[in-house]
Length: 375
Ligand code: V47
Ligand code: SF4
Image (cartoon, rainbow, N blue to C red; front, side, top):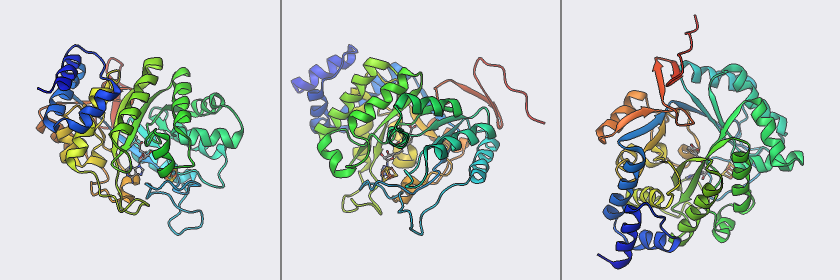
């Protein structure tokens, strides 16, 4: 065995951290099956044979956005035919659908509308909470939080307090893209920079919110940038412990400003899942987001480091606008089949990774008494 790989293998077996240089070495020189075997050891040590999923629904309240990230096919100009903005009634209808489906989580992200004030965004959270007092609201990335702080001239703490009071429960992992300043300036030069993205998660964690993290790969970045990205995340995690899961996001090029770049292959997707599992030693979970990876790769990823496939994901549009060919939602039966066929044990979780029990659309967190069914 190569001496560097030997050292890395020893480190992983002893639960020690792999350095940035070793991460680059794994990314550039180690074959997929070796990476997968190492990642799977860590995955099984942390999560046994369990594979998590949740029952969730997406809400993207507007696609109108002041920014023009080159990788984004979702955004719209203010005056474009494609532009849309949700009304309160549309939000209520989406929540009613979520409640009827027994969703435990609503995932809310969207564009930064040229004309909407902070109150409009707070109101969306409030309307969701009033429509369903129980559903977990995973809302807004640091890109939005930074925009809200800019709009209101208030610190992040104030912005979070307003949103928490309205019903926000945690922060999703989007907007991270790639932290390296040079690559970031080429793909999304205007939006919240890397240090702000990390700072906003730090503040969220200090205020008691849990959050997720992502990395967009398969565009202009290289192994060095990926290892640096994962390292910056684990350094913040050392400090706060507030991240729950990491989601490597495969770039979908269709209808974007980077459409000359081919979509990452299944081989690359599995390598990224494995590499993140190996480098992020202080993250409990790695999510293989089936919407982006496709059901086959997501299923295979459960043996290459991933222990979560995200959820039923009704109404996903960000990746479908960028050419994703996956269905816009899966039933729980389909998710179970995907997980069981991979030899894993399906476990429904809520956003905070607590185990969920359910009787149809009625659900409760394990250890807590079920709520009475509404008449
Ligand atoms: O930040 C946008 C990415 C992210 C494209 O926290 C694209 O549980 C690929 O972060 N090709 C938003 N990616 C989505 C996100 C997410 C998804 C699922 C679960 C969670 C979670 C978070 O989507 C953006 C950006 O990195 N994105 N356009 C595209 N064309
Ligand atoms: Fe706007 Fe987000 Fe798309 Fe960037 S990724 S253009 S911030 S909607």
